[in-house]
Structure formats: structure tokens, C-alpha cells
Image (cartoon, rainbow, N blue to C red; front, side):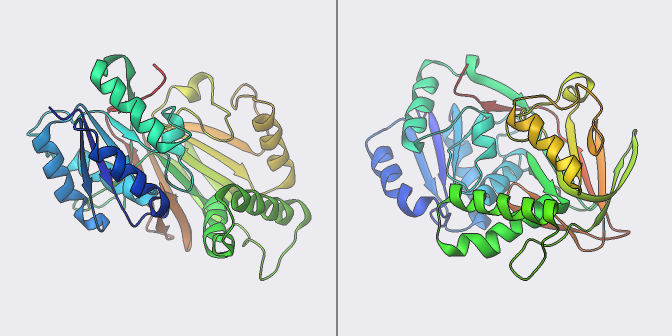
Length: 325
């Protein structure tokens, strides 16, 4: 019986060095069904094959785009004959690894895979956690939503794109690239630095919460997530911690950014007190619009426009595998 179905995308950046080790490990382990795709367009076919072997756990080994497409196919493709899909685990392989970190999966991916196999052998029940997914669409009834767990918008999306287009090509490690990006973004906000090699200024964005009104302005950070951790380890508390879609927006101002950094660095929690320039809300439906404003859902870029908002809703809870019970 197959315990673990492993879906790998050889073209993801992290797999250029990792995949030979993954193949070697899987070749000597009959408990693993390893399926490799050449492109994300083949993930639907991969899920059909995985459904046939009926694994106890599905593990995704690829970048953020692979994870997003796999989740979308898994929970919209109905490959398991109407039954609930098995819990999902994500190897720490992408640029950001936010989903893997939220599930307690970090460090060497092969060791993480070994742990997952061990859990599958002994029964996954004590390690299954429920997470809602973000469903992103243009609001049209005929459109097929894209599913993910972490969305960055406004200035945060611009910063991510700046890192991708300007910093990653320098060939530095992910950690150093992210540190340089953070320094440049903070320099632009705190000192008003502008120029060809600086991150772009945040554009105006309108955010509508179906029950809680509207936010409008320039935001240095805009996060919508269903993950437990929001930003730099800080977590929402109180009413904001109980909602499905958690929204954190930080005004594009030095004072608001300083407050955010102090809360995050010292392990505080957003929502304990009202902080000017920091907006924490929850909702079941969120609309984001702005002229040529980008959002990034689990690594993939989508564009909002004035009068044509991006619509976010939450799915029903779905099972994931957490390493720490």
C-alpha cells in the first residue's frame, strides 16, 4: 500500500539541486509514489494518478506556483470520487515557504519527507489540522477560482516583484536577497528615497469588507491569509483571530511601519490595542481594486483594476498535515 504520494515539479528553482536526492530516497522506499510533472499544466493529470493509489498523505515538492496549482486542482477537480482528499504536506522548497512553515515543516526537505513517511506509517490522525483556503476570482459566476493561503498586495506585492526582478538575478541566497529587499523598502519609506534601483512607491488601493466597510489609501503592506501566522511571527488576537480571511494593512508611512516592526520584532500580537495606521480585520469576502494594482497569491501574480476588483472568499476547512502534533 502506498502511504505517501509525492508530487514534484523538476522545473522549480529549489529542485535543481534537491530533486536528485528526492529521486534517490523515493527509489529505495516502496511506501512513496513519486510523480513528476514537466509543467503545472500536467498537475491535473498527476492528481488523477495519485487518486488511483489512494495515499494517506499527499506531499507537494515545488515552488509557490506548484503548490497553488496543486491545491486548486486537488480541491476543485474532485479526483477522489466525492470523498475528501487526504491531508496535504508541503516540502520547504520555494522562495518563501510560508505554507510549509505554518505546518511546522522546515529544514532539510529529505528529513521532512522522512518524518512525513513515519507519521503516515503510524497514523496521521493526531497530525491533521484544518485550514481554509483563499479563493481568488474576478467575481464572475463562470470563472474558475484559484486557491491559495497567503496573498500579498499593495506595497508588499510591489516589494515581492522588486525582489524577483531586481535582486534574485544577482544570484544571492534567498535570505540575503530578502534582507536587501527589506532594507531598500524601509529606506524608501523612512527616507523617501526614489530612483531607478529603488522599489516603486505604493499605489492607491481600495479594500472592501462585505460587513465591515472599506479601507482606501496607500499601503506599504497588505496581507490576506488563512495561515495562523501573519507577519514576522506576529499573530492576531481576539475577534480578528477567529475569522476565516484575516486582513492586515499597514499605511505607507514611517510611523505605521515603525509600529509594525516593533510589534513583530518583540513578538507582540496585532489587535491587542488600536494602533494608528495598522488595520486588522476579518471577513468572509474581500474586494481589492486599484488602477494597475498587483496582488500575489502564493507566488502567482494577479492584477486588480478600478471597477474590476479581485474577489477573495474563503473555502470550507480542508485537511493539512502538521509535523508537530
